[in-house]
Length: 302
Image 1 (cartoon, helix red, strand yellow):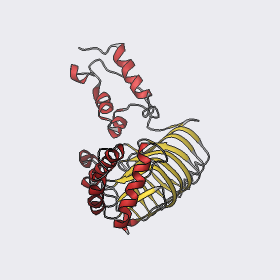
Image 2 (cartoon, rainbow, N blue to C red):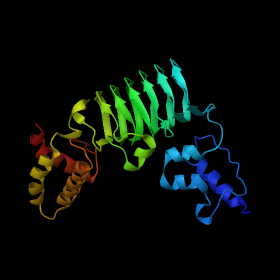
Image 3 (cartoon, rainbow, N blue to C red):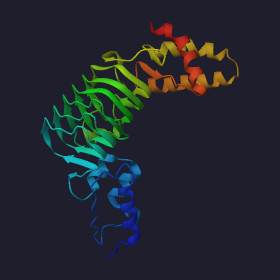
Image 4 (cartoon, rainbow, N blue to C red):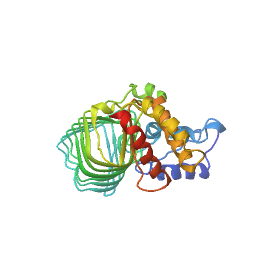
């Protein structure tokens, strides 16, 4: 009978207590035959961490399903209407398979928010997040319908599996993306190929390093406009126009950087994005390049 040594327990606890998994209520009760082979000596949790599979990590964590403390809030299988979370300061927030209707999330400060942890979707309907500051490195499998995000400050929002419908934004989205389609490996787990993203108003929102990928229909969103952004309604045509002009710049650093940007745009097109939206960096070597490319391609998107 194979025993689990103290080193393995320490490794598991260290993983579970490190971001972004620190918000999960963890309690390990390791049985002597927990690891049937050397290749699986970290068990399901270890493999899930190596894959970066947040849903599997949640599934393998043992302990209380819900925790509410001064710094952490975790909710599972809840159906809440009109609940007031406003003004709370949290190190972490996570929701698993829960529904929130007309709930108040205004003025919150959340260091790490997972709006839809686990495999089953969490839904937010007509909720207000106005004035909140949060970061969502892994927002999870969440659906927002008719919610407001006025005057928010979002440090990071990397949305592989988020759905947004008829939501309104103002304030700042500093870094991240919205994906229109899901990783094929997740279809079996989550049961849908595409994320519904439509009817959202971003016109009053400032984007810093935020974009739309893998098939978000930008004609169904209201986007911010101005000198900080590049919008391409027909990116294939825009790239076709830009390439020979950029080639005439010779072997300059500007030409090299512009080619990198064009290649990134082509990659986004191959991944299913039919219109492109890019933020122009405030400074740095790519700032002037984006500005020059915008001047070249803006007539193709008129």
